[in-house]
Image 1 (cartoon, rainbow, N blue to C red):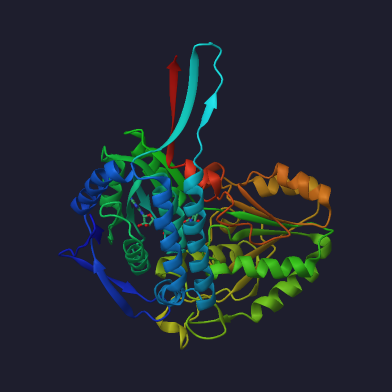
Image 2: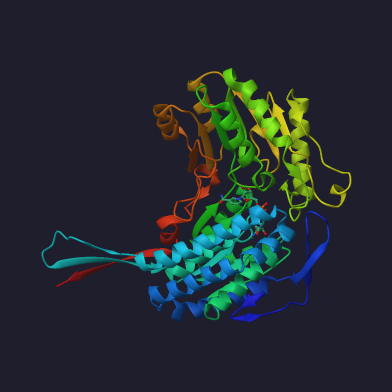
Amino acid sequence: MFIDGHWVDSKKTFDVINPATGEVIGVVADGNHSDAAQAVEAAEKAFRSWSQTTAHSRSAILYRAWQLMLEKKSELASLMTREQGKPLKAATNEVQYAADFLLWFAEEAKRTYGETIPSARPDQRFIVQHQPVGVVAAVTPWNYPVSMLTRKLAPALAAGCTVVLKPAEATPLCAIEVFKLLEEAGVPAGVVNLVTASNPAPIGKVFCEHPAVRKLTFTGSTAVGKKLSQDAAAGLKRVSMELGGHAPFIVFEDADPVHAAKGASLVKFLNTGQACICPNRIFVHRKILPEFIETLTARIKKMRVGNGAEEGVAIGPLVDEKAIAKIEKQVIDARDSGANVLLGGERLTSEPYNSGYFFSPTVLTDVDETMLIYREETFGPVAPVIPFDDDDDIIAMANDTHYGLAAYVYTKDLSRAIRTVEQLNFGIIGVNDINPTSAAAPFGGMKESGLGREGAREGLLEYMESKLAGFSI
Ligand code: NAD
């Protein structure tokens, strides 16, 4: 753990496993309630000086961290592949994405402009300044174990906040490398603190209850996000929540079914389906369904499943047994309720898959709203295809979920695209595009997919308070 500028051990430790092989690849400190409290207190102490530094000096440190991350790109990527499982190329892309946040917020740090507001009184002047909120507690998931950290750390540091971060228990090694890099970049002692733990609940309790924590930023499941939001409400702490998704992928009658199917195969199997923006319901107009399915299955058959460290592997393992069990349950439920398993449908158990968590890439057709997969986030390599006939129905079908993170629309008709974007209740929409994300663009969900935005200009304001000064002159 990294607390108050020191790397510290704890009496207890826990193992980190390579999900492709089952091998133990590291042993890390198992932090507890009092480690978390100590880290919060270190951050509280450091806030006094860090919040007084200039935006230019904070920017310079972030800029240095960006350079270091690019220098260590291949090292970080290969660690990520071993710890989290994604193919090396995808891991390399993630490190680039993570570095993008360091650069973006190094630049934005200098642009936290306030404003002057005209008063109705001739003897009065209003000035609004943005100030850092204070100590930030951050909780991150395992699926993007480097970029989900910089998406929080970079804006918090740019704003002048100090941070205590708890990474996911499956991926603490990547987090440790990110913190080493911040230390090397010159972040002062106590400004960033890392608490690794196998049991997140006691750490979460400190984050929600400690009076010094002024903001909680969380990325993970909707269930845990709701619980932490409720607990943080007692102390009226600010919260940002990046939660689960159930993205619709809509292919209209006029779309090119081959282009759309290529897009669907890439974004559905991104990170083995373990991304919050992965499509979970692929709606295809019945007229172009055969061509779409033919291309989709042909593309998926070509994707090699295996250890992400091996050349040519496109789909890596899942994170753990629980993930496999959830997917199996959804596939069995869909099949028993009338879906057609066109491809895959089961766990891979033969050599070399038997020591890891592998599931064969799956395509389900004739999926309908009675099935679990139509409602529950899958977080795995299963593509459920649902035919539709009418434009009027499809918007209501797509919006029929309590999630609201990402959605995808394929059409060649500009008016239809604009109308659809306006009517969909999702925070991120790709139009003929499967990657509508960037450090410069706001990322976040509506409804039960979250509160607040990360990245972009908004991402920095999430860590700042507006302070009004009214002067009588
Ligand atoms: P999770 O909610 O189980 O865990 C996320 C983090 O919360 C982990 O660090 C975990 O240790 C921690 N946690 C769990 N219980 C806690 C508690 N009581 N107190 C404090 N911390 C606690 O989710 P997961 O399975 O790791 O991640 C997958 C989920 O994350 C999916 O639902 C996915 O959609 C979502 N996600 C969302 C985004 C986004 O930007 N919206 C990005 C990535 C992942």
